[in-house]
Image (cartoon, rainbow, N blue to C red):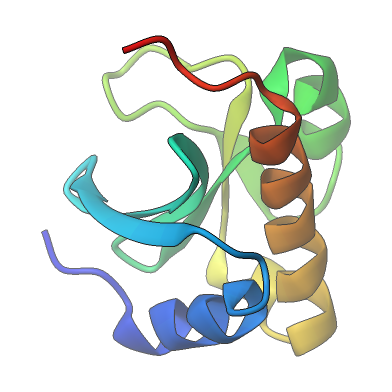
Amino acid sequence: MAFDEGLAERIRALLADLGEVSERKMFGGIAFMLGDRMAVGIVGDQLMVRVGPEGYEAALAEPHTRPMDFTARPSRGMVYVAPAGVATEVDLARWVEAGAAYATAQPPKKR
């Protein structure tokens, strides 16, 4: 599945100053990783945001969001944001910051 390259460029610009950022193919799209944790991603034209279990219900109460249900079963702690929800740079920055805050608050994965 292809992903919205324009949205990816906007996300790259927002994450540029956050240190160790990498990209991985994931969920048929692309995921932006901070360290070894996913912060946000893109599947098709949808922004995917990891908000964590604590932020899940509040995120779903926001306009243009829905549960991330890539496997037909909602993934608690992750939401999709429709293109209308990230149309402005302010809106996109708010979602990217939410994903980055959750990712950077997690302990490193054990290897």
